[in-house]
Image (cartoon, rainbow, N blue to C red; front, side):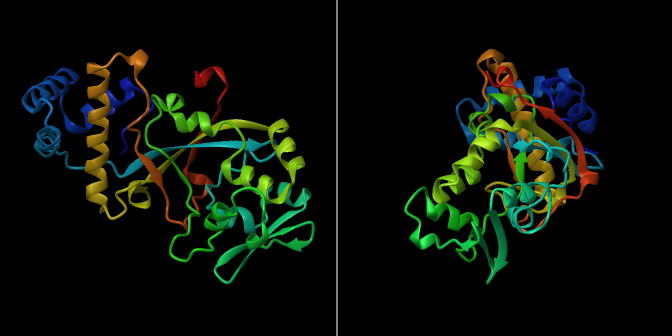
Length: 278
């Protein structure tokens, strides 16, 4: 069971079916809570949680949609395994093969990822271009602060209005910094000339994901938090002009740093054009 977060209409339909109330009843309750709360955010939150508890279904969502944005090289777009960065860089796959063709290779050593360029091991302490501190962080040099995880967003309805979606439309930050630090600009040219921007959709067990800034949530807490976020998004549609709505409150989802999603969780992919980001 999952809440369909593709659009306002799909959220209304699946949320109301889950809570066994009509759309009119849902919006009436939202209006009552909003009027009671006024500008008091705590009263609003308390009212929404009371609504959820009063209409708590026997079965809460045990799956969640995750929308992952990525610029993918031609020939790699059909590799739909959701890999963490460690696995993506250090195992043989369609992406690491392209890097190897451009003389860039990675391997794991002493708990972090080492980089080889033109047959020589990269010394990040002697890198005078780009942001070597960022590269060391992403490559796991800072113990306990590894950042390998696969991530995405919970809502699709306004995703292409998200500033993050626009920022990701170019060369990924990791690749961009790799190019700057190593001076392998031919890789950057190749990447932009032979890639397209995609949204990959996955349907994942909710106990397998974490909400950003809520790492410690139990499965039950994640289920209720998702419902809470959907209600707040639907409230925004009522009290805001949809033309001027932006994707500011889209929950960020991530997997554990060592997790890899098999292709069986993949649902679909979509090419994102420049017009879709306007």
